[in-house]
Length: 67
Ligand SMILES: [Zn+2]
Image (cartoon, protein in one colour):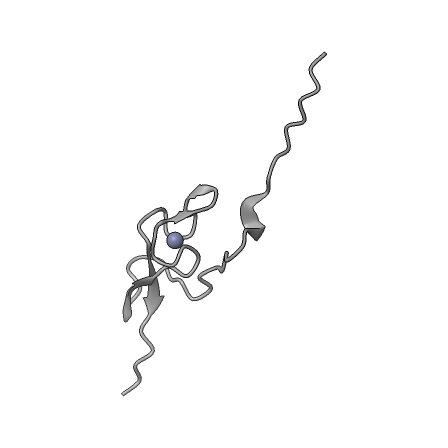
């Protein structure tokens, strides 16, 4: 018998994993690319490719420039 203990790591709680709560879908007016907060613009997290930006290091967020 093998005594291997494969654990599934639910990767939502990694250190420094901040979600881009203000991210908006592509095509949103008055939105611009910003550095992904989760991976700090690197495009990668501990688990591999950043799920927030898809590895691009950038997310689309609204530009709050009223005036
Ligand atoms: Zn990212």
